[in-house]
Picture 1: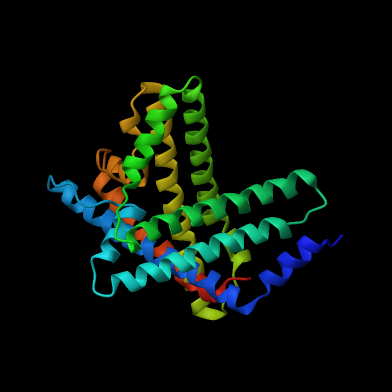
Picture 2: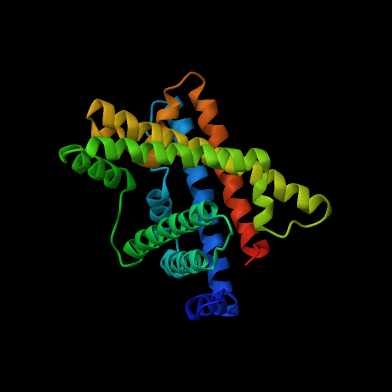
Length: 272
């Protein structure tokens, strides 16, 4: 049954300007993932040569954007697009409907989680746009340290880690099953097949990266070492130390670039 708030949410969702801004959020997120993928490949190659590379996370990508000509303009576009996409997801929380209560609240939680991620990215982009700086790894370590100092915080840190691991597995499953096709209007012919390949590779690579991030949070909890929880940058750099780690990280970097390109395509093809 419709309610005034649900009708208002539906009207907002159908607003052409709001849709354009939300689509720009997908494009911005795509650009960030392309940059992260490129940084990850650089980390892999520099790691093989004994270097450290850059920061392979959203902060590193935004820092790279801020240092380029016209970067300030791009940052403000990123701020507007990411906040708009976050608000879009909040609207979708209200519009989710399902006769099965568990499925309905599960889907609402998923949409709300996406909203939090996009708004957090928007805040980070705003920090750089205003001339500040941010380090995702330091933020993750600070959060972990505070939790470990709090009674029962270790259990919460484990829960966070397991949730991120679950999210990573979810991304891999989406990629393998190609259920992301429900989110877009898949073009016909070769173009459609290319989009599906980009989405498949991208979701799997993103899932692997998130899985490692979650594992590092759990390791930080069990070892009482907050430095282990170093976010996406630390997770990707941790791959270098594994057998064939350089090749794995290069592959993940390429996959993240593919995911970024897919998000750019999704900005045009998304079902809104």
